[in-house]
Length: 451
Ligand code: NAD
Ligand code: UGA
Image (cartoon, rainbow, N blue to C red; front, side):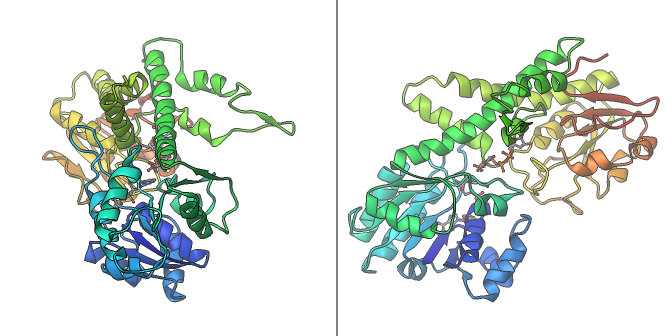
């Protein structure tokens, strides 16, 4: 099948490379010439494990190419997927301007193209977007009515850091369809994927995506609220409490005599909050969508409120341990919103750095993913970037672990602590629980009251 994908970000490019990998002919379209050139050279514009290798293979066998020429690509394809960004506006609502621009361009490309083609939204969009905004723009620009062209909504569930694996081994494929023919045509694209395939309404597909991300965010905030309670209750420890909760058979069932630990338990862990380009923006968008419809989003409000408190809690722990942050030097360990990615969008590290600076601390940052200061680390004066953990910890009064990189758990903390002026370690991800601390080190994990 020939497929055009509009937008070559995490979702668009991963989708393109993986669909090429199962034999389709894929054209990736982006407005950014630099991205397009990089892709054609075999260099992914962002870090994603395994993507460069698959990109090189699909370029070599001629199954994938990138271009800025949207019109001819769409006209030459049976299915066009729109995978552009849907960022958050300052009022919390979803910004659909990139979707609208892409829909208009796709419609214009369909005008006079002949044949039956499917337009599918892969980006995360609020319910009603595909059958109102997208449909009307494509209809207007193409001069056709939905039905003459196919219309689908096909949400994506991949995670950054395991995007290739997630796309190739999906839990489910959701196809929201304008009519049966749209869904049937789109399903050909996924013929080789062996997983449950749900054919449903366009709006159900849109809502499934938001409900899925909101559930994950809710579990994280639930765990963090229990952590906050434990932090205020001497004699409790959130790790022990949640380990006890996880052992409920409804969370870790017995399968053939063995207790299994489903992956969902990894979202029932305390930490310093969720970040990334999706969970915060999607919960915000669903909340704004609810309010527009006069539905009070009580749970979503609480999820975001708990999440916004976690970075401040980490900074409070450092302040309590040091007495004051004024004049202190603090190492922030980890910048990415989670391990396995170089994405800083909405990372909890950003509010942590900002709060430390506001309280008068000199901040030194380190992340194993970066050897040079990331260009999007806009955190202001008084914040230094370090290329090694040693550099960030030398002379520091405290270290705050914000990203749970495995490297941090495996580090030689005896020698790292030797570099510090005062030896306070605040573990915002509870990844250093297994370390044997030398005398004189104050180690504070999240979810425990100070001794
Ligand atoms: P991204 O910001 O990484 O990439 C978007 C790309 O679209 C950019 O390269 C941009 O130049 C391009 N673009 C914008 N307007 C365009 C246009 N009119 N024509 C051609 N190209 C255009 O975005 P992303 O992280 O891949 O996310 C895309 C969508 O997928 C969002 O709705 C997001 O919520 C959703 N999503 C993201 C993830 C993830 O892990 N990042 C997972 C599931 C779903
Ligand atoms: C998330 C979802 O997991 C994907 O299914 C979805 O497709 C994607 O959003 C999306 O729509 O973009 P992602 O943002 O890549 O994927 O990252 P996650 O692994 O879900 O982690 C999100 C954040 O939650 C990270 O900051 C992580 O550190 C944090 N987290 C995770 C916690 O704070 N605690 C946990 O227990 C688990």
